[in-house]
Image (tube, rainbow, N blue to C red; front, top):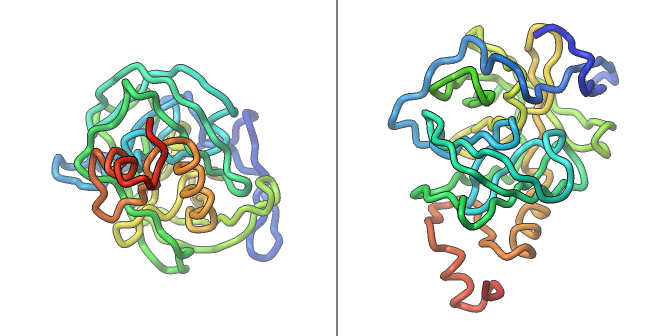
Length: 253
């Protein structure tokens, strides 16, 4: 991807090398350029959604984990697309920004709640260089089917643009590269949601991701405070919030 003048991020890598990187925010025309279309039985892909023109991941019936730079604080109406072939529904969401890192939680309105059988587990530890994961991402127009790519973790660093939020870089192993619209796209390592796409440089590699494990407590607290189940996957299913309220662990709706 060519450098764009829209919303540039300054990235600080391990050796304190700073480079200008362009945010991979929507709208644009491509997504995971060179990626492979997912199969119908891809268990991780079904939770990958499009909201606000960016990619995100449904981590509970009402919550999407996404990139902070895609959303302002407050409530906004957007078309929400779900599933590997984009099913569109109207949705209203309220975005919450993590204190550090390019991470946001987006709460969907009740009428646009997700009905997936399960939700992904979030990583509680930072990835290690050399680990390989699966990245998913698409923009709002280009693909009829969600693409994915294999990516290898390279460097861990802190980004001053996001209050020294913990980040890491990955290189795609299959010739693919991220494009505008992939912002917020998930990287799964060992089946756990490890990072959300933040920025790319030059031709799309390396890709920079926000480390989910660094804000795991904030994610739990934000979901619990705002009336939904503190779900982090682990086999959680639809109706978990009702059970928690019934047992007195969450306030009644």
